[in-house]
Image 1 (cartoon, rainbow, N blue to C red):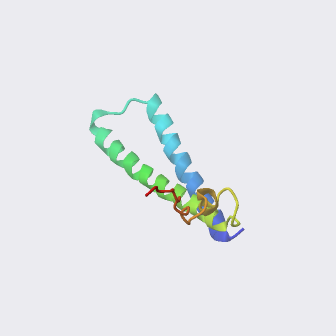
Image 2 (cartoon, rainbow, N blue to C red):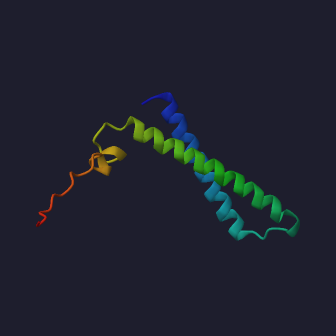
Image 3 (tube, rainbow, N blue to C red):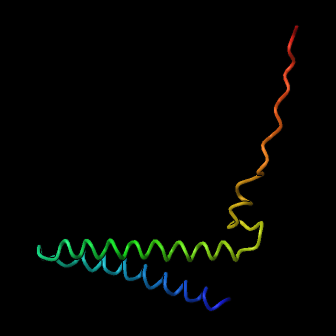
Length: 92
């Protein structure tokens, strides 16, 4: 396993944990009116970071997976060539 894979996994775990932890914490505490917009902005930024980190983590996993494995999107999609056209008989 490469050092960058470990770092990407750790970063994704930390960001997802921070996002879930902040949502749980905010559900138990009342948000002051003066801080509502600030918290909304901060959670929006954090959710963007979480989405980016999760995307990078799973794209790296898909790149490192062997070809033909279930995580390989090309093997799941099926053949890339279209089926030949069907010939029908015409009466003259």
